[in-house]
Image (cartoon, rainbow, N blue to C red; front, side):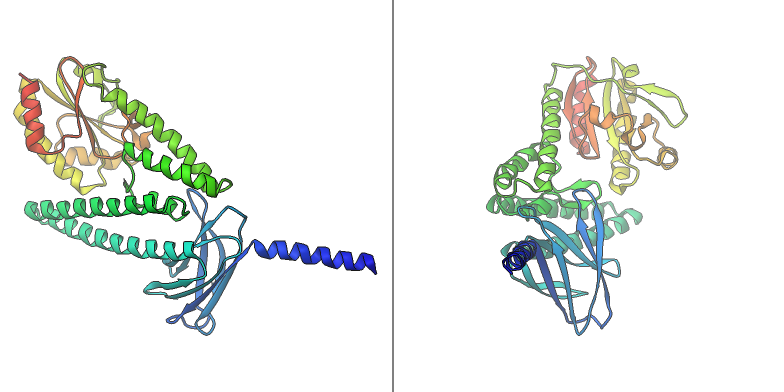
Length: 382
């Protein structure tokens, strides 16, 4: 009898331990019909995995997950390929979520972290809605060759980016011990525009790591953050070397042009060189190429050369754009950056540009304003 009692106590102990690791989300979704299918996905560092499917009954739906102590997880709830809820779950959470499939989450109860994440998600969705609307305006203006409108919308996009980054930075510093800062730090306004993609953003990441590693030492997100910081610090070291103006010669590049001929950057030695990195998939880059062509035409007979690198994986599309845009300078392609050319010059965002003087020294970087660029070139070609 005593053995049986001990066995039952042991079972109850195991059950209580297991329940501590369980987290539950209860949804009230007012616009969801019975049997509405909801796909549950989970963030796995650098990818999203489908983990479950749940169904609505009487406007209610629920989901349970096993969460390990000290290791919160991010879940996304999707209907018809559209995310309507983002939830962070920790062991022991019992959340009540009010939402609609069309409008997303309106209220979360049961966890401060989950409440914060819901607010972040709503704010980010609003910003992305504005970004998408402005992007559509930009494309329409480009197609109509309305340069005034292009400049206006581009300026609005820049202002939106700066404001959103300022607000995100403020949130990170005010909530450095909250796991919700992880998705904030890795936001993207487009496939090529991370919110925190600047080299010096590594200092923000280190601040977050120092705080979160004491709260969630076993979280895989913290381990991944540490690895990311190491990579960013390596780029920062290389950046400091590249910015040592006049103290170093440029690293050489050897790539194929659109005619399958190897073109070396070093073959332009003795010239003033604009080393440009671009993408055919970004409409604004085409505008910059048109502006760059005007400067190139004015100074090519006075010693100016352009060596332009595209890292797009589609070489055929790149070669077609070179022809269609009438790019007469040296155009080469490093498809998908397989040769590591972008890493060689520490290119984190495209477009990027380096200006190399006649002595082979990198003297300027990322001068995209046409007037300022021409002013720099006019002095160097003398």
